[in-house]
Length: 316
Image (cartoon, rainbow, N blue to C red; front, side, top):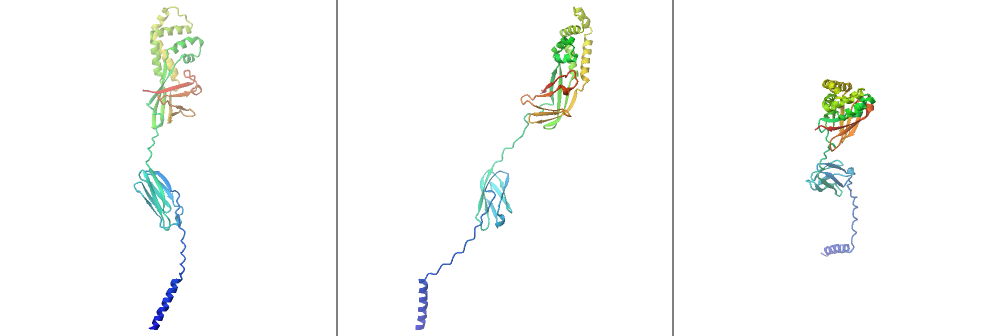
């Protein structure tokens, strides 16, 4: 029994000794450095229906990468290797959470806006307003004087004819190939001019004055009505012959032109072929435009012998 108790006493003494001496604590293991997820953007803004991409710049250093949207009613996301694709769904703000093994989560703030209203681009002017545009060229006294070979003896006759204010109508007929371009045909109506000229001279007062100034130009003294009466019987024939002569001279030149047209904003371009290309603004109020042609471009023409400023208006 004593032996047994002695063994117990030894164990007890050893235990007491152990309690009296505190054992050193084991040194803690060093933590490994935490991986940081690096993103190309942490804040994006897109419109609903649009998408944008964010790159995980250190993707190769990560494992088990996942992405998640906090509010899937506002945006959606997907990941393909290092590229995160974010798609806007509806207006609002949310976050895309990016996670990886051994890394602290990072977030991308996403703002989604409503789509902009579509921008409708319209021409500065509506052109052509009608298929036909018109310009009236008035035969003034200078035009008549030029047609009469600028002979001083016919100055008074030219002044009389210019006072009749007879004109030639120019027409530009437009045809569309597209909304802003096409073909056009320009023509001046010589036959209508001939009719207007004959009608003006058929007026009794006009015809009497015409006879007076014509006889003076030809060197005859117009001393009484007997000379006028002698011409009245030939009035219709005389007027018709004169009208045919004038219109015939005009028709000896080209009075029809084919051209191309296009419009950019309110600038109309007319291409008559070769170097004859003209650009001009279209008036936004009345739709008119002015085509300037120099006398050098017109060539040898007794009627259009000077620069032309042709102001065309839509035929309404």
